Length: 325
Image (cartoon, rainbow, N blue to C red; front, side):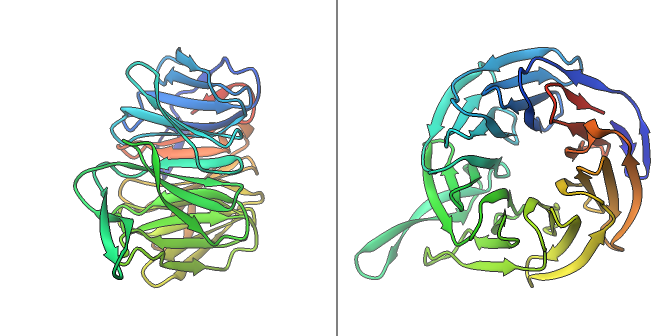
């Protein structure tokens, strides 16, 4: 962990051991009290982030775990797997709530919407048809997933059923993100594009804006609290977008390897990018310039996140041991 974007002096280091194969993914609770990991060993593990002690080990998937996510209220966490399924777990007792079925190939990414943003409604289309759409609301919580089947799916967490299926990418969907105002779902694909899907279309028809410019697979997309969109690619760049216009504001260059993960600071002033070039870079959003670089540690270049207080957390997840700094 590091004090802030301009101060990358290491404060502490914690290792989480137990997986018997490569660790593919990591997710933090909103208060950073626990961390969830997924591995090629087909297991999901939950650790106390302060002590490194394993809280529970979850079985059920029959394929490698490709993605994990924790709900904003920390009451649930989800896991997506090579076995084509998503499992929704309850945090307090580690019980399986739903097994989500709908993808035809490996699930690469799963994320939760912000708490209390969406609910479903049924509207009439024409004279006889009705469709279920997503509208802005103070109730409800949803999941989104992306898959090798080139689709993204919006799921109703309470019922464990798909609400919408987003079709259009020409490559696998490896990253998804909800905008904070509930207006869009962003998807990043191996077709080199980012797509912005309108979630509250009144006629139930998918409206999409295609963002082009990257020259490699899109591995990460994330929104700031103010609605700016960032995308990270295997073309070694990060792009900052205005989702309302679809224009790229900055192209951030400096990584010498694939960009694997992104995170905005709580105030939206900075964005951090983790790459497989053994570095984590912190960028000034307004200026589009790199203000700090953490490099030289292969185990801190796969994931990054900011705590609510603005401290930067970086972690590695390719060995059998997760390292959190």
